Image (tube, rainbow over all chains, first blue to last red; front, side, top):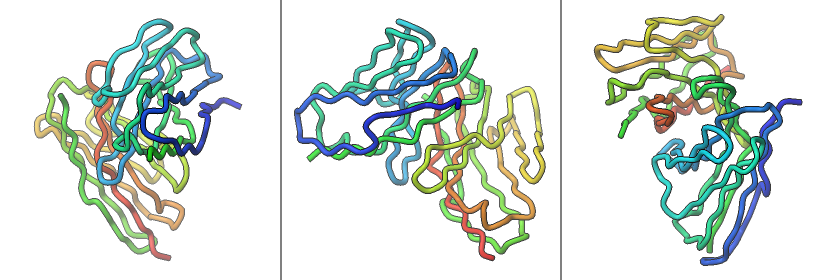
Length: 113
Length: 110
């Protein structure tokens, strides 16, 4: 089944404790992206990747890192999480171009205490 | 950067009625406008999209219109059904990035 998977689905952590949210897709997609969703703000793009080893900042990249060492994986790294990064995070991927259908993962709900 | 505004934030309609959600964008370089439906506890799912060289697109009960001059685009759902109840997001694509509206919670009453 074609899908985008994220792990963990739920995470409660404390300020300053480094964490990684994994994202994997099995559709051989080139474009991958991370978003955060907050009430009343819609989705905001954090980082995106056009292909392996090619990443760029989205609208709200501060406090986040990403890497794209393999085509299927695009982990989101929070080196020193803070309470304002408490949010619902979505990974997404799309095919050959950025305007192909974007498929979203199920989401990761992160709480930073 | 791009700024996408979406209205209304909530919309309640009777089953069988039509629903219209409107979005405006600020950057004339935006060239692709997808619409997503998000059901509770799930990720957004693409329901229809339109490119800047097209004025209207229809897929069964769903249609999207784009007015490039006015920089606005709209989602039209006809003959609404209870399963259309969800949160809908518009988005604009601009230089490999996506900018989303704040969402519309649609409630279709049986």
